[in-house]
Length: 396
Ligand code: GLC
Image (tube, rainbow, N blue to C red):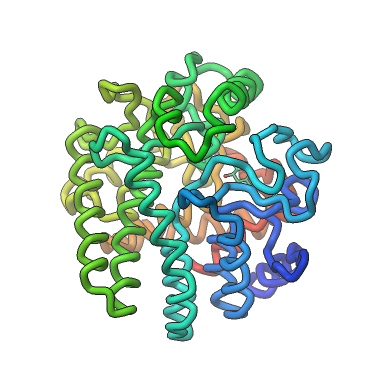
């Protein structure tokens, strides 16, 4: 399996004008994506450390002046309107999109550093990380409430998740992603794109506080603090820890109810009571107490009425009206979300449960191949082929 994973990363590798990166899937996703490249770097750090560094260097090459790292880079040019990609969106820029994606790049950098202790690489990446996380903590939180906002479902990385139905003004019953897709793209069009450098124009648009996204922020700010400390910047290190703590506390204050963290939206932080795998994401950032975590696992992860399907972990549980075993982000298992849950469970010492997830992920990829996602009832591989996320089992 390890060999196959590395081989896939090699065959999806591209070099454009000296910039090396990996495409998530040659036919369906032939560009560079933000969180995908973080996964690639983490997996590559097990095989080829220099390639892992190159992947991250290319990722920050087009970072915006305000700190945003764009979610897609079209290295080959003519990207936004290229025919073979379904996302034919005019983002307002040619080389990149103008929105971001889950901010796990601090973790990717740190994981690479842990392999070879190359402090020069840390120093090289630190200014990029500094301005990216600073951007998220300030421009994405203009009301100063310590929660980071996303401005489009695309930014969550889970484009069609039912967590976003209500804020998009949709009901829960469209497994096929057409209406949802249309509204996401309308949001891009009508929103702030042309004025991206001006934070204030973001305020009226799709104001969602996403649980996984904020969990990634917390965990990655803690890692950023470690990076700063390693570089001898103890003042900044303390500052990042302080910010991580504030976001964690705000999540508890505004999102937590009945043992679960819920997405919120609008100025009054309305909770969105839709269960998805995202209820487990705070485990990755140690945001549940040990007792809460235990109850969460027992009542939800291990419940056959919810997340304990034939093949685990479905992105949406059986109990949700939006559950659809082959619906895009509305039920199928994705290996990256399993990777977060796996590491989250390990944080709490739930080794047995974590191993079950690892084994289930492995089996899915062995049987179904490197597919984009998998039917949680049958295990059938679905979506894109030669999709890189399956390589994350090397890191479980
Ligand atoms: C899909 C996924 C997104 C991913 C992209 C490239 O759009 O929803 O998370 O980054 O594909 O793999």
